[in-house]
Image (cartoon, rainbow, N blue to C red; front, side):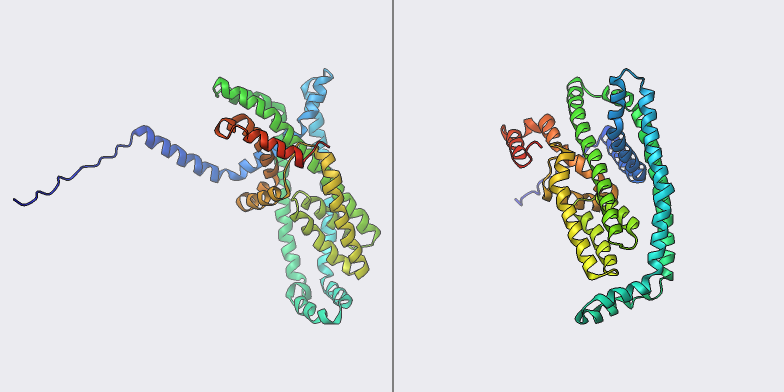
Amino acid sequence: MPDQPAPRQKIEITVSWVTILKVLAAALLTWLAIVLWPLLALLLLALLVAMTLFPIVRWTRRRGWPDWIGILLIALLLFASVALFAGILVPTIGKEATEMIRRMPSFQQDIAGWLPESLRDTANKLFESASFSDPEPLMKQFLAWGTVAARGLAEFLIVLVLAVYLVADGERVYRWLLAFLPELQRKKVGAASLEIGTVVSSYMFGQLITSLLSGAYAFTILSLLHVPNAALLAVLAAIFDILPLIGFFLSLIPAVIIAVTVSPATAGLVLVLYVASNLVESYLIVPRVYGNRLRLSTLTVLVSCMAAALVAGVVGAIVILPIVASYPIIERIWLRRHLEADTVAKHAQIDAGEHPPA
């Protein structure tokens, strides 16, 4: 008797409506996150600014003053800074940038004249590009950049307005959202938010100080050495100081190149003074400004900034460091039970050894 074929087994997969709705909800949230990312980025920056300035409200509360006084002080501080920047720095930067573009042909001759004979041919080939011989297209590009800069300034004003509203109403919104969580998670979030707020505030306030010092230092030495476009280069130094490691080279290279038009000795002195400034900032100013709050190794800073910049652009590079610095808090409060018993203690010991209290 021939073997009978095995009966076919019927496999049935049942997907509940609840699961389908969850998948659709996840897809909808993903789509909304992509569409609303520009707004979310502004909100994230506004939150960082608000967390940085909220100690002003605490300061007014300790003196028994109403909250509106602290909020008014914050608003005046923010918008006075914007008025100073837009009224003084922006016209100066625009004038110097326009002048630098118009000087491109003479700029080529100055640099080539100071180079040794062996490098002069290579430099002349490089300077044969249309940007140096005919600055008109570059001028048009600069005007286009000016439009982008104006839009960036408008977005920055939106960030400041949102920050003021977050300072004024952020605590109530925080408590309202916290009520959704179970009691145990509320306690954890409450404990973590205080520490994370301190880390973020320390980072943002410290970054503001170091950026201002970098810009003032660059303007001083470039002005004393009679390097053209000192204000423009100083603003670049202040802005690029936000980007650890990479920002130093982005501000150093144009300063040295423009200093060559004065003399090779001036360019060399600018190089030495910029490097000295970076060393002083890294090993003397930063530990005192940031204190022992932001414990990040150089490798962590570099990899984090590069990854965040690739994913979320400049905004990601700005906000990633306080987020990464908050990891030990998250590890201690939420992840401890999922790790080996001594992992948290070992990490704390390593951090304390590498970053002793200032």
